[in-house]
Length: 384
Image (cartoon, rainbow, N blue to C red; front, side, top):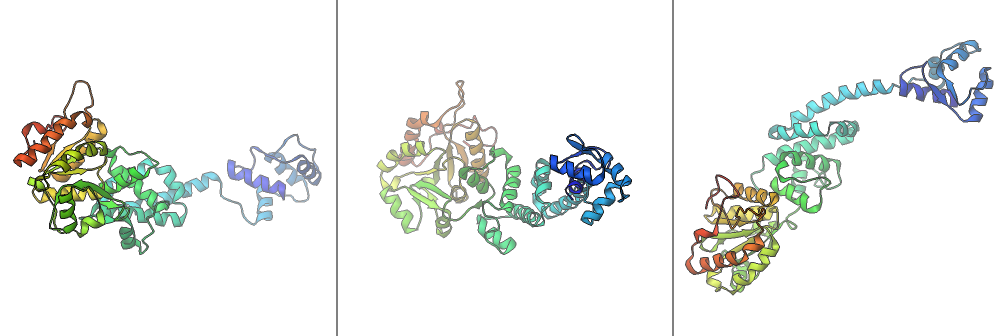
């Protein structure tokens, strides 16, 4: 039986009953040779020699016939299995594409970029079901008209709020599709928490309504919390769920300043807080790639008529963030001290004094001085 099992496994690998040989331990080779009435082979027993021996003995059969007798069936070879998998994969791809809807481009890119891994993964029917869910989630994300949290989306599509949890195969596939959609973000796998949040935010999604938040000071509203925070100069960390519950929000003088870096935000805070409460300008921090909460706040301010002045570093990442905010708030967008320099990247920390002057000027005149903005790094379409 050990001899025939080894012959079967060799056939699966090679697809032939007569080529190659099988390796057995010394006792097994000795026993096989004795049973077949042949000289003990050195190291390996060739399948051809085994077949010849079987024909000469009382068995009078081929290796294939002996394997069928021992195991009731002959397994498919690797080539046969591969051919079957290829046919199945064609049908699976077609089904996934049919579910893609308006997400067809990113789904096609995902299928193309990860074909080998996907073929292996979705050969498991349960994992193919999860891949289906991922594609349906990508299609649904394309159709979102407002913010949504992932568990709500998962429950809407599958009846299970945990179906798209981190660690699930469906979530992994969903994120890979979103990476194809938002290739401009430059995010790399494996995704860390910050990158994952940025990827979801770009798709109008958040992991939950609490962890996605935006930092702000000087917001105006009929909401008591925002009114009292503005009067006291307190900084607020506003989660998405809180923003959803606030009916109105506006910026002082219809001008909102937004910065990329927390260090810049912290440096500007003393100036904002020192100004009279009734003339305190509005300052927002996106903390890098804007969270969904930051996107919601900036869009609501822009749609309410506020001009958004955004200041970030002029490296590739910073300009990418600026373009994202420009798309979110156009035509109410203006860049804020994002100068092109012959020295290379312009970091916002080098413009703190100019930014402080702009904040004081808005408080004094309710207008933004023209020197405070520059769209040289953003190209056509940015307002000044």
